[in-house]
Length: 158
Ligand code: MG
Image 1 (cartoon, rainbow, N blue to C red):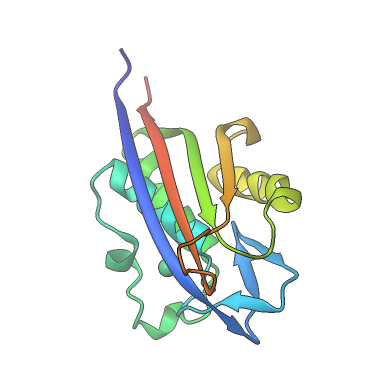
Image 2 (cartoon, rainbow, N blue to C red):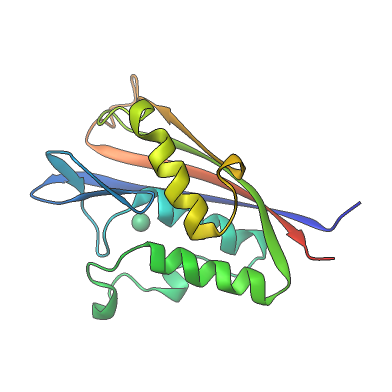
């Protein structure tokens, strides 16, 4: 039995006008973007927490405090790369990730493979190891926000 760890991350950001929409490290064409101290990429923030959580290293806010001016407008792929470096340094690899994005618009289906490809490149794994599923927030009253849940499985390198 290989040494395995599972990590879980969750994040939400509110939609705002005159803000670029970043999801999975991809800038998407949308009238609304996600507000945040960094680029508001809810999917990458949840992914970062899943990677850190798998090794009990804390959370994204501990490494990249939201009040710190150096992270204003930062690309969230930088946060994930840092978390991934920590995972690799400790001798672990990412087996797969499974993400659910809950948002009203844009519809995820036509964008899904672009996002999967980009997240796979950030994680340096094959696209078949990156699952991104879209849900609409029916009856949740969260049409003005995007929510992401991500689980990540890590395996100790042999
Ligand atoms: Mg966030």
